[in-house]
Image (cartoon, rainbow, N blue to C red; front, side, top):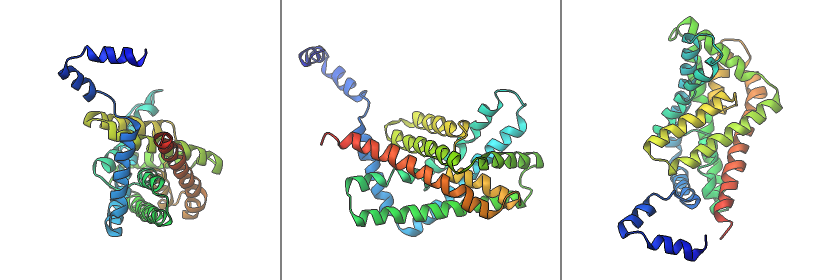
Length: 277
């Protein structure tokens, strides 16, 4: 259709109909980019103490994903569809974190990177690295605290705790390369979810979070904070050593999540928006 044809079609609409058509247009990539850039600047401007408390809360909240999945595993029959349904517990921690405006490391592989891509300077890079360091460390501390409480108390039944162990064993399985590629996909999906959220309405936002994070769980991908709760729970029970977590599991997953979020989403989508400038 030519430009003249499109203009002719548009001219057939009444003014109120034209306004409705404009309102129903999907926001462009530039709108998402600017919304995320502004959010990223807000996060970069926050005080370190505020980031730390928010990061700690997020690390604790992500433990809810293990709890929800473990409870579903315990109470559902061993049918062929069971793994897909039990992974519906995986989004619970993400819902708590995102709707509660808590700081999660894998979200921050995208949000502060967009301002950095727009204002490339050593000062901005330093601010991004500061944000990453604070959020990552406090996320992991929260994950460790949650794992210790679950491992050393009777807060959950023995059957549910046994499910937690099974989940942890599945999370820790695989060598460096396997964990790394699983983490790249997970980082990509989570950052893509964050990119999509500004364009989503309230109901669609919930669905976006659930579907995208369920995909990470159902695909048996590796998420550095959810997985840390699961693997640290094994360490707290003596099933593996903390050294195994720190040197064998954490490095490939952290690297993969970061690469997936920064390169596959932040950099590519930034280029999509700015390539015509």
